[in-house]
Length: 213
Image (cartoon, rainbow, N blue to C red; front, top):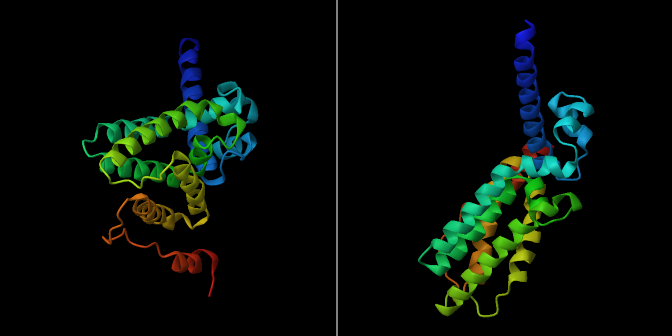
């Protein structure tokens, strides 16, 4: 029994770490990065000491919690830059970033560096904005992007997009996709009147979730 004890301890530690990360994704995803560490610990079913043993600082926890989203963000940027059609690449980058933000309030906070604990995400944001700048340059050269577009325009739209998190959970992704479509159309040099993604049923969702009449 004694010989098996170290293995058992390591297994318990791995289980605790996994529960903490699952809890952090849920808590930060719904409440944002302002959620306290004790809420994550309670959600994971572990004590604060166990949480801090695995993640000594909130920054450590945030970086590990959103590792998958950061990899997805890198992939969105890489694929957009590799697109032979600059306008399509520009649009796919906007859609991809919006969708990542719609799935998690915490990742949106970290990407926008709204909290000091998220400073490790600065490089991700700057990499994405450099990609936007390059795609914007290419798309302007083809005449597809409005000549007056500047990077701050996209940051403004990302700030507005954070309001999607206030919608009922089931409506967030559809709302994000429709908003992204409007944003892309607003940036287009010559607007088109093609179909938009389906509109989210926000009022119906509100009646269901909040009991509104």
